[in-house]
Figure 1 (cartoon, one colour):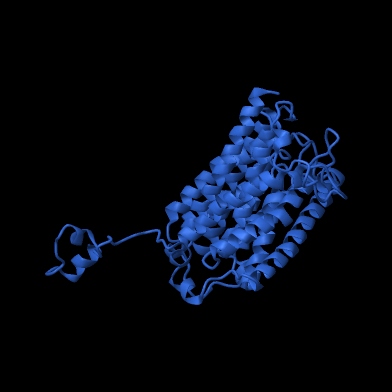
Figure 2 (figure 1 turned 135 degrees about the vertical axis):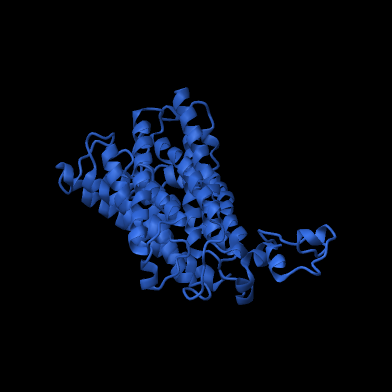
Length: 441
């Protein structure tokens, strides 16, 4: 055991957990005021459901000894986690429970990411049901494929060991996985009422910027923490995360400036997330210069990808597909092009003389996760749709899903006694005021 490594992994786990409330602000600011609470509760609900399942059997499915063909771990091996709380249970240089905690946050965030694709139109109960089924049938097995390495007599997943595709912190398991699921869920549930004719502008851009800042902060735990040690690999991942995110924001804003004439705060925040997504699989596989290039490409491509939903006709409310699916694919495939043997991963991509060997491995890993997630998500969503149903009544959906689902409003502009302004509450009267004065009040 190493106390420094243990402290870093536990700190990183806390940073990754912070990303889910950060995501709640990021998504919550982008929806209309009448559905912000429901949007934020979908992220917090994911914490409750996935954390419970992770303790019961999720960790065991993801990291238990493989039960066949590198597809799934033994769900009973670590069920309940009791066998891992002994002081002798270790994962590398840290207690096994530190690794359990760190990976739990990945599972939570991945489920929460999907919610942005179906904003404004999903009831809370069916969402929690979907979250539990999707984590069980999609995330836990895919995490086994990608993150479970053969070690200490435990056999892991096929992508990590047999295919040897590189995914340092979740480009496939987290972002391609959630992005493909978001696409499938958006198609099954259908479009928002009035989309794309009606305006669906963000109701609170400061929330969006706050959320992006929290995601940026937490992402250093997400990527650098994936080194699972306080060492040089963590430091490289840290600086690469910073570098890629910086140029991704610039790339997104440049596309906006050329295409729309103005760089926007929403674009800046989205560019930050696109860069974080893109560098996630490659944080230990490229040099800092490679990270700058990767971020620039990811930011520009994700910005351009936002228009795909209008041409294809699916309503991905908050552009989960454009940022997480496209961004995850970009970062995963670029490892095969600009990966450098100078980096901790030690693999040269095509442009560094490594040929196409790593590129085809990356493509197969990405394609397999995309296809599996899309197909299984379609089946899960279809079953829920025809049984309990996802959407609220049309009237409730139009009036606002916050009131219908949670009996609350994010912004209360009147007091309980019916007063509607500060003047009423102070006993003053609006009588005699001009129209302009009333508008100002």
